Image (tube, rainbow, N blue to C red; front, top):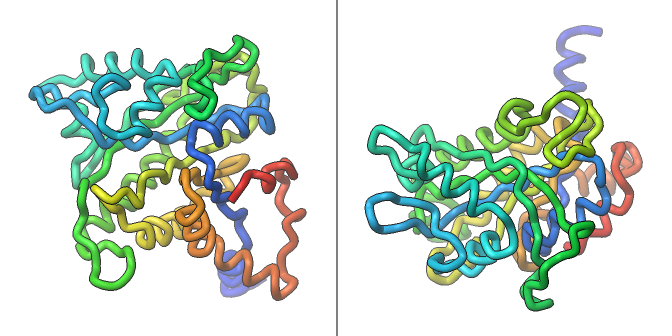
Length: 285
């Protein structure tokens, strides 16, 4: 086959879609554990509230202003990892400075995080040990809390902000796939159940994007995820974008997976061509 033919085949190769759900990230993660009991689950968490005391630590359940940030620390053991991350910062660096850097941002990996409490709608009940879920969390920050948007649509106005967004998504993929960073040891993962060689399942947190106090560029984020999908989707067993609200989930799905719907209408793609757990498509959009 000629190189031009190979290039054309790659260009038209259909990669798996990203499943966009209105479930909040933690609830989506619990649902995915039922579908993938022996896979490593990696959930992203975007911190927005930091200490103003000079230490710049990520604020926990007692001090965070964001309800979603409060919930993450209230329902999981992430607080232990968070304190360790703050201590490990040296040379005058702070978690806030590293996570929210416009250029060369950091994320920190928090392995062996337990989800041990249920959702707010149930009164945050403590879960039975058999119902608890052990995951890895990747903590990041926003390059701009209130980015400059274009006049029409929810698009970033500054090129620097677009580059920063793409860099964070690339970093997320590389970290989630790094066996050493994820502490995948031998034939088991963090909870001792993962068979060696299984692809991880990634949950991308895309919640709180339409918050009135700090609206985020959902259109730009969706377009960035569309490009990210072409590069990285096949490296994971599944990728779920957890938005926490219906309008954001629908917007993400429309932008990110537009080629999937177009090819399905043309008869070029059948969902069964991807080796998925069929129940994955049952996650509410």
